[in-house]
Image (cartoon, rainbow, N blue to C red; front, top):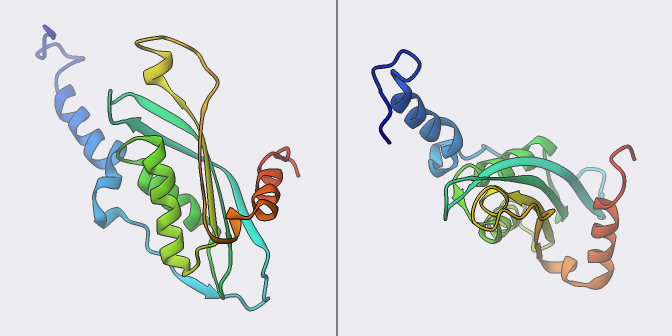
Length: 173
C-alpha cells in the first residue's frame, strides 16, 4: 500500500492487526473458544417460549471483510432443560466472530441451540446492517437485512406470531 512501516505510528501495525483478527474479530473460528454450556432442569415446568431479544453482535462479511453488525433475537421452548441466558448471547457472538454471511450465521445459531437444548423448537431472527452495502459499491444506506430460522413449533403460525410480537415490543417492557 506504500505505507512507511518504519514510521512510529505504523511500526508494529501489521502484527497488531494480525493479532486482532486472530484473537478478537475471528475468534469464533477456533473450536477452543466455543462457549461451555451447562443446562439446568426446567424445575418450574415453564413450557412456553423463552425469548432473548436484541443480542448485539459484530461480524465481518466474508465477501469483502468489512463489518456487519446488528441484533439477534433468539427463542426456544424447553423440552425439559433450560440454558443460562448469557449463554444465548455467547453462542450468537461465537458464530458471529468469523467471516460470515448472515444467512449462515442465522442457521448456525439455530442448529447449535437445537442440538444443545435437545429440541427442534427454536427460532432465530437477525436484523443486521452491512457495511459492504453502505460503505462501498452501491453505497446505499438501506436500513437492514433480516434473516430468520423457525424450527419445530415455531413453524406454526401461532408460535411464530407470538415470537414476532415479543421481539417488536419496545425495549422497556
